[in-house]
Amino acid sequence: KINKVYSRAHGFDLYEERRLHNYMPLKRQFDDLVNKLFLLSEPARDYYKDKYIIEDKKLAISSLGVNVPYKYAGFEYNIYKLNIISLSSCILLKQIDKIILALEVYAKLNKNIEITWNHIGDGPLKYKLAKYAEQVIASTDNLKISFMGQMCSQDVHRHFASSKYDMF
Image (tube, rainbow, N blue to C red):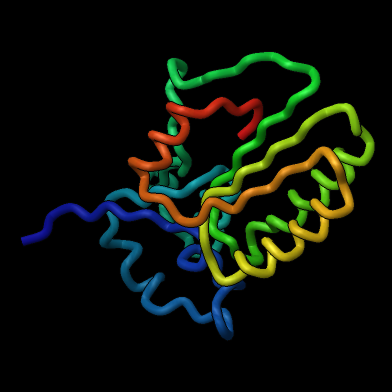
């Protein structure tokens, strides 16, 4: 009864190296049945093509992300303020700690700029990242960090519509 199959591969369901014992169950057995498989990037497409030996015409790229329509872009140039937003799971793979470190370095080198960073997302490292951020905030006078937690897609869109950010 099913005559077409479309799917997406991303992260742990794409890269064998991210799974315990590199075990990817049934991946090769079902590739012939897929009409189109969507991946997030060129490197992901190339990995899948080389690793699972699948026809190129069955692979397509469809990036994830939040579409921020131009009408929401509330950019107001102010050389003394920098507002940043990020959106991802709080997991090791996302390396959110590197954002915190980069902001610390930037804040210390640019004491005349008021920096605000908001992060949308949740995960097992959220508490640890928030504690690290608190330590960084304590060592700077011009940096504010907020972990906003998980939001549904509609709330993310509402937030972008009502907020002004210089960098995503």
